Length: 427
Ligand code: GUN
Ligand code: ZN
Picture (cartoon, rainbow, N blue to C red):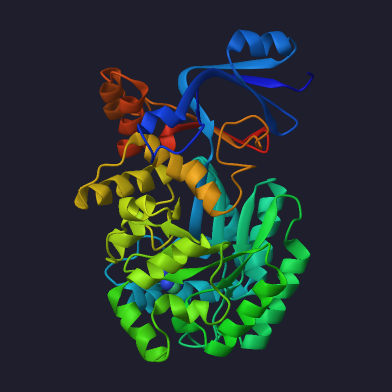
């Protein structure tokens, strides 16, 4: 077919979950992938793909790995410029570094500059889809969606709603949060590759009235995702208990206001009570593991294996800029390290699945993105498994592709991301 491109290399895809049985049984390696009209049109032996599309342009990537672009299930694009800010824990970190930076997004030109910078950085690191918090300013959502639309990128974002415990200039009201969120949702949700997520920041910065308004909006648009934070730090949980004396636990502050559901994304979810775990699993909500953030801000160790074994839906995320890296490779490495501290080493196949299929499932987008599968949108990366001298010498003595991939996961950065395709277009 005219316009077809065939990428030749080690094409990695998943046919199931690597968290059941042997981790590698769910993974496939093929030697070519064809893309046309923005989608993956074939995966399989190069000779067959070439015979089916003799006119196709062929790009031979040799031993490099061709796979789905990374999916980052929880980020704050407005925190790009203040990533890696020293020495504070969650609430002090928000007040000292985060809120002053987010204040700047009242300026639409600044919002546009950071949206473009953030998408440049994440593309360089191989992340093709992300689910982002914006700021309280509708301008910040407009800027992010406009930039993503220009790049034909599949993204999710929403206006971050807060009506208390935030400085003047970063507070809305229950009504303005509802009205502005609804207007942005009506304007953007489903346009090109853009989705809107209803976004109350977290219970400490919303009154019960605002949580009610967000819950009412979600009930009107149940097809939308809803994103927030849950049980990240012990001090935060104690504060929630003071602010919501009638709530059974932190999750109940969402549940009581219509903010618990299958399309809900709950960032961090580290210190969960048994009731919270059971409710989250029963409704099929997504928990988002943010490992570099959880160590950087000193939050705690997410129970990946316990929650997986209980059947939770789990995504992986950088949590830029509480997280200390834009790289999903570095994020997988941190997830591995936290697994080690909890006594369970995650396999490279499990880490790569979490950063692609797992996060896509958390976003309810696994039919479109997150896997090098026929029919999926052509958001792809080409990984160089010898991107630095240190990695090259390690992967040179690897006995299989998993050992080589693991070296790149642990030591790789944007230099490992050789090529990026978004919506069938090379970036
Ligand atoms: N909890 C509420 N807001 C935030 C945020 O911006 N980052 C993190 N890590 N946790 C939060
Ligand atoms: Zn966050």
